[in-house]
Amino acid sequence: MAKVLKIREIGDPVLFVKCEKIDIENISDEVLEDIENLKETLNFTEGFGIAGPQVGIIKRIVIIQVNKEKCTYKDAEDVPTTVMLNPTWKPLSDETDIAYEGCLSVPSMRGKVERYTNIEVTYYNQMGEKIVKQVKGFTARDIQHECDHLDGIVFLDKVAKPNGFATKEMMNKFQLNKI
Image 1 (spheres, rainbow, N blue to C red):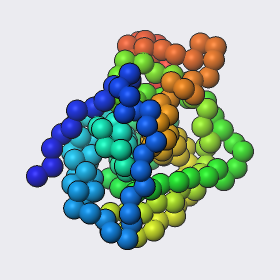
Image 2 (cartoon, one colour):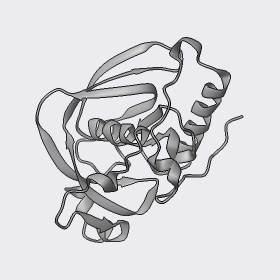
Image 3 (spheres, helix red, strand yellow):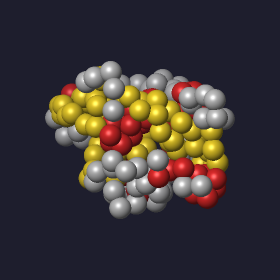
């Protein structure tokens, strides 16, 4: 039975470790259990994605799940629960935008981060099938953010300056997340 795992917060050394690749040819029961626990944990939060290290799993696993009705990004699209093993991405153009991001591992802060607006993501699902997709807007941002976690990077490392930070409270008060 899947369980909700503790979200690791900024300062925890596990967030700065580069994760190990999953053996796609032999997806173990342990990996499948990790996936179910990550799904359960994400469902317990208000987040739109989660990566293994955020709960202490040092494996290249990302779960994305977006409900556009609950997302304040204007270009958000519904994304069903999507398991990504060993995800990689590449930009499809030089076009970027700067927008505030939040993170389950940095619960009270938001920061302006520049991300590519159109990417191609390649990953394997939990059955070991290779998937290649083109995504844009918030989904592209979400995937780039979660993939950073797999390489030991948190969004704070990429905040655009000056004035790139805001608290969650001020984001809501001044509707900065509606930009």
